[in-house]
Image 1: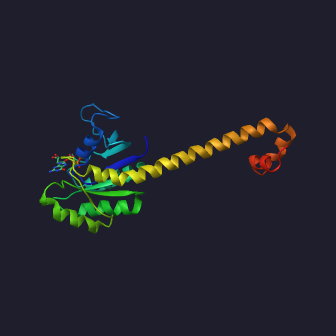
Image 2: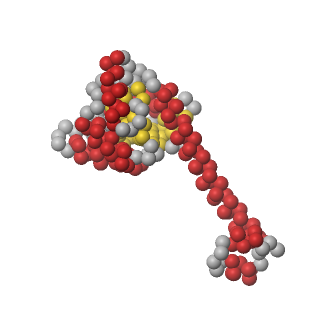
Image 3: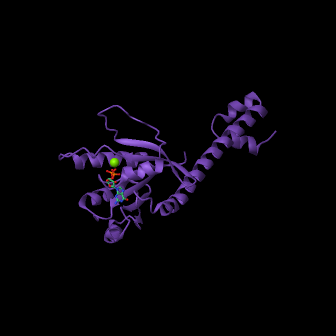
Length: 214
Ligand code: GDP
Ligand code: MG
């Protein structure tokens, strides 16, 4: 799996609808225990050729008392810390609310990469909300319709360069590990025991071997 994407935002903006669209039936975790609300739902997403882990911040919908703000904040912070990229969704038909601003604040401070999605974007009723979303200071809003599958190509276009970055980073990390292992193996094979003892006392053994080959 190349990277993880957390879908965050207040209840009812369409997070789970998008999650279900991206995941289809490929749910990584299924909790069929009655009465259990899973706060973070994880699935294997597919968008064209791209494969990634998607995290839905569920479990807030049933909260109706004053604890909602605090729980939203904690859950979002958890999701942000877990994920490589956050997709922050607002409801473009409603426009930007105070709660959306609270989310934007967390994301600006905490998230590594944020994509702003103005959902329910089908039809002209969403025009004003999409424009308002610019004011959140998170870059250009992506006009999406999770329910109708609109804006998925734009979402893909946003994710592609990030996906490439993560892939490259993973390859570099793997390459570095390979070099270290090969060099130390080569060294052990060629160096007499007495020199091994000297090399272990400070300078990196692999460099010593390269500078003073026998
Ligand atoms: P969540 O609470 O953020 O997970 O939101 P849900 O995915 O449960 O969606 C809340 C409601 O919005 C549901 O009735 C969905 O059918 C509806 N919804 C989701 N996406 C869209 C959309 O793109 N357009 C419209 N018009 N409704 C949507
Ligand atoms: Mg939901």
